[in-house]
Length: 202
Ligand SMILES: [Zn+2]
Image 1 (cartoon, protein in one colour):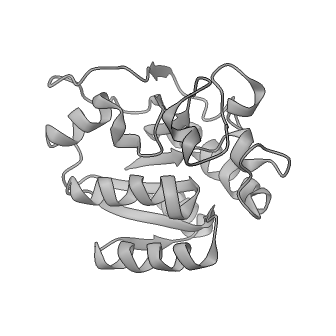
Image 2 (cartoon, rainbow, N blue to C red):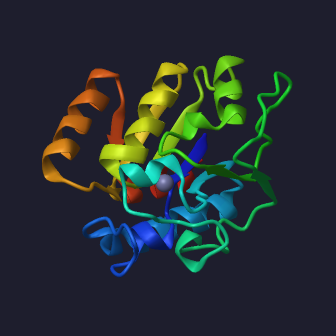
């Protein structure tokens, strides 16, 4: 099992963030529980994070957010999970030999909302590393970055479980459409309690 922690950065999560997702504050306790559990049970975790520079192409669509090395780009639970870390830069290259190590934390930087814009992650999918792997996905925003992550993992043959009380969307209509697309792709839905209970039972 692998956790995918999507863009849980201050500019999206905090009520006064540059691109605040409505009600994102409400999921913070569940995000913290999931990320703590990842450290406790040694679950490999990928945290995607926007790492922008002024003038990035994405700012033609969205207001400027998550400028690299600024407080808005920090993850709300920056210290979690408590696991050895690897930072995957925006311009990382695909590595056919790359493998996700057990119990490690990968911080995946990106300049586009789709995580698979990072060639390292796209390369892992290409090499079949996600096939039949179970991913537990949480974060923001359901209708943008979580959507790209979930559908991208499903495309790579992964079993994907979305933690419905640990995600939030930008707009009700696009969020509804996203749920329908996820269901059509065979994605499953779960809750924070259920994920933690299953971990405790193993
Ligand atoms: Zn961004």
